[in-house]
Length: 209
Length: 209
DNA sequence: CCTTTAAGACACTAATTGGTGTGTAATTAA
DNA sequence: TTAATTACACACCAATTAGTGTCTTAAAGG
Image 1 (tube, rainbow over the protein chains, first blue to last red):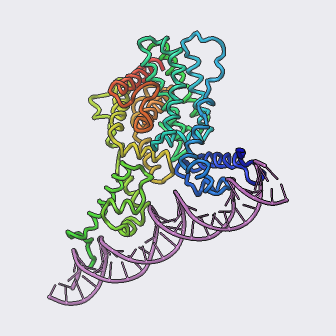
Image 2 (image 1 turned 135 degrees about the vertical axis):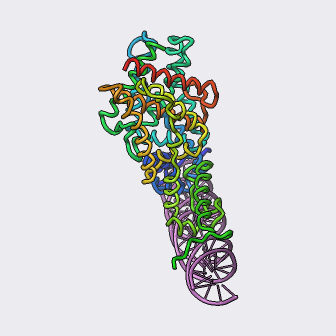
Image 3 (image 1 turned 90 degrees about the horizontal axis):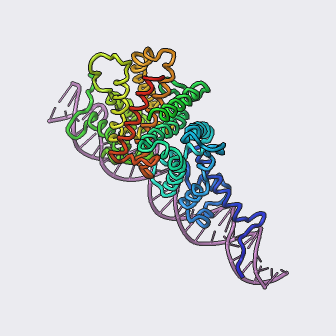
């Protein structure tokens, strides 16, 4: 008969797997992807590194599973779209950007992942990118592309600048000084200025593009 | 009498120093800051690593000197400001952003340095940030702050979003897929869309802020 | 129970890394 | 030319890293 996976109090595969996955997140958050060394991960997890090889085929397998399991974008939901959309997605888009801005501020794990994606090629990170694009298409295809018609791509370009600007500013705020263009991104005041700017840009786009 | 620095054909301190500094740039460009290990630098420079210790006090000293010597921002000049400025710096700002966008696309060394700044704390990188801010203040203090008056900070915020967006998009284009919001940042068409977006945002800012 | 399997601790190796000691010969001062 | 420096090559050592072999014993099947 098939032997079922070990799930005792002392030896428990599923629990150990989770310990490894948690350790990856913990290290990523504190030291970034450069800190993800197999000895370190095993130490933080409190389980022998040999298990990483047998459970995940190695550190890369563990990391890939970590990235695949985490679904950061689902958290970046544009809040339950309240009611029907009659403005071409303007309120929806604004909310989504601003929510993302704040969400990213407090999610260091996600920040480090974005930084990681800028730092090295990796198949599982590509999947992250694809998920992100797919999520963007939801907004574009359904609302803004129809609204903007032949200028749809122009709005996409503006969105790209805003979204990537917000990504960058959040990462920037964490290191080597948090003042950008004289605006302190660590203060409520500074962050509100950024939010207002985003609001202004979107507003003008929907009006005059 | 003082012994003058060695400057022979075979042993030449100044030449060796330059070899090290060049090696740092070369490695940064190809492998990023993570590749800057002392053995690697010495190998690329073709000079024994011991000299890094005696010339620069160690790898950190070499790296700091590399960063201090390089003045990336001076290249990002907004082109000789042609003629007097009568539009509150609108044309100047637009040109500066677009020039920077293209400059960064082709300067991988600079890209890696920006990425480095997002990745770790380092005194010499802080200096880079300060130089950048100082350069920004030239534009803001002289032109846009007076022009926008009490809305000066709002324009600064918009500038922050644009500048950081352009940084991010250029770095993003290099890895894990170059399509953002459905726009391919590696194509002429895609990059032009981004540039138009920047033009639109600045235009609207100067008109309606 | 008892037997079989394998989770997981521990120890080991090899490769890579940062850092230093020594010898030699190029370069300079005399 | 000679003597004193010292740039630099080459060696070495210690610490960190990835990866594997062995042994103990917890847990599963009967």
